[in-house]
Length: 217
Image 1 (cartoon, rainbow, N blue to C red):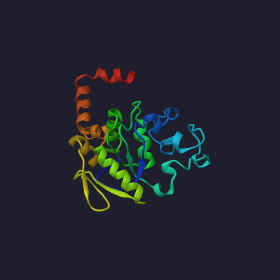
Image 2 (cartoon, rainbow, N blue to C red):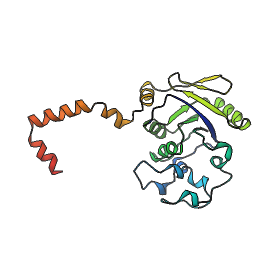
Image 3 (cartoon, rainbow, N blue to C red):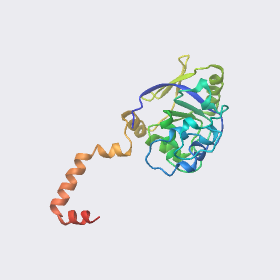
Image 4 (cartoon, one colour):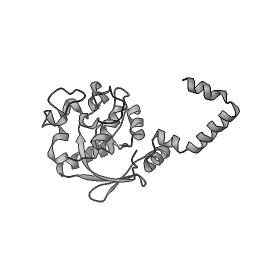
């Protein structure tokens, strides 16, 4: 996955509490486990006026002009500002896949559902928890100033606002390390590729019958 070090981006508001994963990526799009192609269906039932199905051409659909991500001022947004309990509902990992493939690198909210929160880190999306009052002020500023951007410095663990003031946030050291280095679970495992290969070589040398057993499967 892509490294997350310092990211500056346009902010889009999701001014709803308890946004669940079925709203983030509806159930009919969960048939694929390819981990690609979910961006066009992010928030599908809110984003379009017609019913979404897998395989549709998004350019032929009817966008909902009232939905925030369809408004011109939020085109190209890469930071999502949300209300409390974002990502509740089912544990589908497709939700952070869809957010990341749409272009969001971070979601800022007062609280997240636990499984969604963990899945974000595994897929290169940084979920940031800030106090509810702080998030409310960000919503107010975002509404007033078109083109509102924030800079997220993961190394320093701060969000830099347009006026230069900073908001500190917490992140667990191991999760921070993985994001800074672009390491998902597979990437972490592959760092030990030489040790894994050496172990397999030694094991087959001492137990050669395992090669035939493995081949049978």
